[in-house]
Length: 467
Image 1 (cartoon, rainbow, N blue to C red):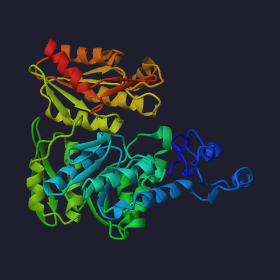
Image 2: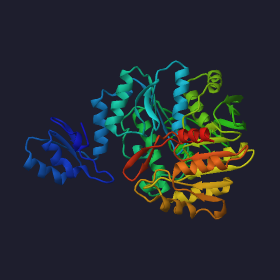
Image 3: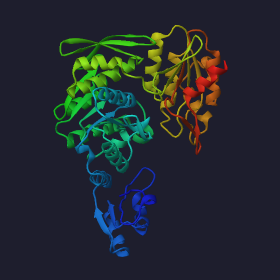
Image 4: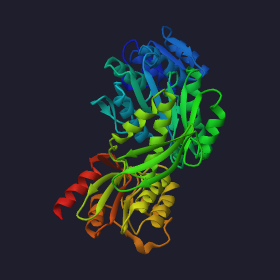
């Protein structure tokens, strides 16, 4: 089965999908010539044309070929979600951290866990492939089957808004889902925040559609979380969490550079959690994971103890120690994520915060000035540089960010990301914090059509050695 003519071979079934750039219906003839014997289409007028030219080909008319592809892929790979526990995490920020935290809790409880996410696809310590959020249905069900065959009995997956909107995980039986938050991102694709929200909502619609006994954990502090809760509280067994609201409510917390402590109130009891994960947003990430696990019948004592053993996630508030100052590498690439990391750093800073960041090319342009505004408000020095410029000119992106900055005197512009990081490290004084934001775990930089090796942490370590 395939929706890509490049991959079609003898006796394939080809699914014509109308995408954002191409329409698969324009490639049906090519697919047949390459050996496809069955084609799924959603344009009835095309059927006559195909029948005339290729009388022996099976034509399946579908109201939605995306849906058909997902259902077919699920069957093709032996319906893997029937025999493993699958949990999906959606939201603008926190997906990677929450999925990796859930994986760690399940592993500590003795499960063999698969992870499908931005950092990589893995089963236990075996990496299956490099990561990206939610693959297409064929890759999705194939990956689930591979993980099942390798002995995984739990799979934790990041589910993006694109994936829900494009029905990439449709027909999967999810044990449960997590909603972390919704803030501005991906408007190049969704156009409006309401469409973006509806895509996230669609994931929970699909959860309840295929599993009447599903569970969910929802951030009730988030206005969009409140809407999802209202829509699904009677259809999915739901637990809520938050600082101001929720069944699992964070009462107070202490942040430091090396440890975080917080008290949560649940069912009449105060629970004290300690963790090596830093930053207030990680308290919310832990709360979302722990609340889901409570619904999945985990003991509270186990969760309190296991939280102390959690390992930080690569590229998420990752600390590199300099000489009397620290550098922090973080994936924050939306206004909200940048604000979260900077607020957490402001809560523990002893001197200045120097922020190095850019914004991705060919992506939502409206968030650039907003990120500039956040950096200006919450940093002492801002160094604007390149992120993954893709097809855009780096200076055009920097100028877009600059539109959100009023006090240009605290801004340094250095297009070259390595030189920008070097500048930040060299001007850092005792007790300063240097934040390098935007790329986190990524080990590449996309410039025009080239993918170049680039790892923020690696670069910082090299520069520190030279000092």
